[in-house]
Length: 316
Length: 315
Image (cartoon, rainbow over all chains, first blue to last red):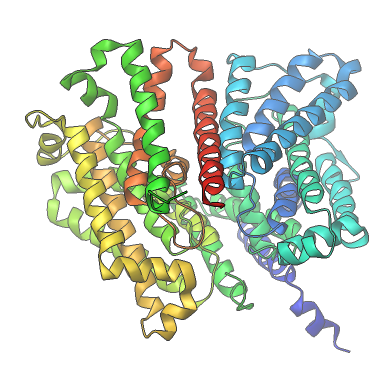
């Protein structure tokens, strides 16, 4: 009846509202001079957070305790090995992507093997795995910075019809993730597992299979993100994934996905990712130093969760 | 079969066993480590890690998780190396304010039903920012008394081991033996029944957070005592180390099942793992990876022993 009221009940709307407010505040400050530049930069950098955020969202949907701390290490390893394999050769771009995906699959299998076979809590399993993956990346990288192939580098940095290419990639994958979550039985399965794993098991859902696929999916998305980020920033660096550990969790939660699991949404990740980038650029525009910027970022995360959270009393 | 050991003892047995095995391997590789100085060097850095692990364990007792532990310890280290050294009164006041902030966080998380992971995630940015503001470049100086305590040489037992033992005993008495500890673990186990029995969960949670902040502050101060100067990123890995330490020591993420002595042993194991690897002459590239592998092996061992124990229970 009232579309506005209905819209305000969607958990993801708040992250978009917040992103829009911050965007407007920045634009107003600069007098509209950097509207296009700021929007493009926001879309580009948000795209990377969106890719890892979607993977993390699937994992968090599985319920309390499910989290993938291996995301940064997977990004680094996939970026490093893919770039090393391509050797600045344009013809190897697609095989390079497949190698990155294969690394993601391998890490995902390793993660779930630890969780399932050794019955380790996911936090510790993915943490131990990330140590091993990070070591492998250090060993292969050797501090060298290998350049990406020309075509790939320009693809990741250029825009199509004013929209950055990486944002289009993120959009495509988000639509796939949305369809996967809402239109397939797999999406129903992981929501059911997140709501009540025992009930899900009794209902005959292949719990282990669904969880396995989810962890692999998360690692694959992280690997693709690492591949794109390494190409975008002109080479793989050992610390390139580090900020995405907290970022991937933050965008999922600010985006309105229930931390307790069982209820997730893809659009919110877009709003949250844009918001997180825009906050930093807004503070930069206002000339804030690194310390103030960090403090403000933290306070804003807490403010968002205080305002948006706590609606569902069953959620911890 | 008669049950000889309680499940709490078994819980403690596995971390103790892994620490012993690791220690024996280190002594085998490097017999000179088997001395007063050697042991002190091996376990020196374990003291701040053990304190941070206890702090994390307190938070985990009430079913929460603190993702800001590393940045908070760094923040405390920065205060210790600057304000606490130059103007002790202001330094103490700042640390007291930090404890109060933690208590407020506990209240906020409880009242608004917020996920602790996200709130502490946000706080990690705040502490990191404050640390950068206080100490933009690495530096500062450790207060004389902190330095004196950390490098003191008590007779027979090295300071590092003595300190870890004291930490273990004090936190054991606090969590496992005091009525306050029982309420804490009750909140983790079944908050509703604790509430119905007439205790305030709000107060319990605020007290837990404040106490955790206190232990984390001790961790930061002792860290500066060892390193003599501080940096805004000095302890970032403590977040993950402290969680790993609690789990290695037999603690669990839910249900208020924790073991303070186990947590200290877990922290010691993690510290020793680093030295063990350098004695093995493993290339530095693989140091982190091997640490992960040791974590996996210890947890696999625990699973095995748990299975054996369960088999023994069956008639």
